[in-house]
Length: 437
Ligand code: HSE
Image (cartoon, rainbow, N blue to C red):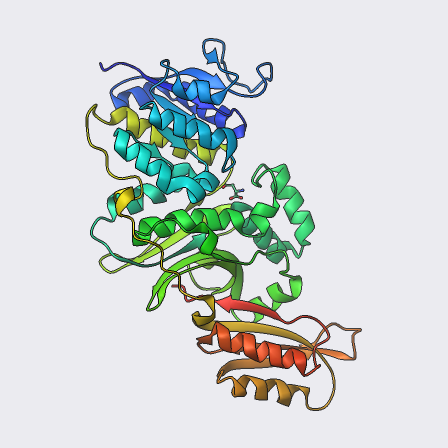
């Protein structure tokens, strides 16, 4: 049997401890699958004394993860520290430069420095595996990098943040407030250390940026993503969506257009009957549309210790199975040096349907004026509904418009004009509608 694969883990939080546990409990099965044993030989974490529920008595401890990354005691460096700079970046770079394979769950790091790190990995002939960085336990990186060879992707979109999907699901199902649902998501360990990263869409954007590169062969461009989070989604939006046959999801969408690649993260109305609308709670889903395959939808657990550990262990097993000297496939599907410069499509050119919820003064002519502003901007309406704001509110009305396909620029101009007309009592709510099967 080949020599044991020696693993060093930096970061022993929920995910790190789960990885150690899975490697220990499934050791026999993994050995059968990989043809060699996998041994955790060294770790690096802030506190040595903490009880993590796993046996670490036989491993070496490193106070500095960079020393662990360069250590001769390991073949693979597992980065579970988090953060896009500092020890995470430095230790991954040090490990690759020292010729160690790397497995990371760090989407922020890859979204910012993925291409540069991939260049080092490819030069050194080592693997940089990152399945856990996108959509938790769903094997979407493997699918896009390995199983879709020859396919040209037109659009990739998905529910990439378990915390947001959990919040939106409970708000809809139980009529609970946003804050109460967020607290539960934090308690259950789904949310990032700073939950604003979840609810304002940054976490989704990091994951989308990685998928976009894999899908279209472009350099990662996380800073060019149009971003809106879910913190301003109200019960009024959720109820109106349901009445109109839609459900609200935070989607990350990357799409090829005539003017470039569109990358956007925002609350989205998807038809209630669509498959992606059935994805509830902390579950993630990724839809990939290609020329050869058509549409593929993968769904599964997107957050939490076990889901993430499953992806990390899968990445380690791939390294254990790989042959020494074997020239591994490129990190982002194409050689990092050959990734094209990202060509951004402007958000104002985005074409699609829109849901617009207006709270207006209840007086003569408002409805007609709103309709006129839509027509002025060439926006064709699929439906227009007016109803009471609530049982005791008499001087305001809710107007809900659903448009046929139009452009972001037209909608922004129309809403600006309606706002200037002075009919609104609150800020207009605009939610994009996404085509989904
Ligand atoms: N906070 C993330 C989520 C964890 O809620 O999906 C996985 O990246």
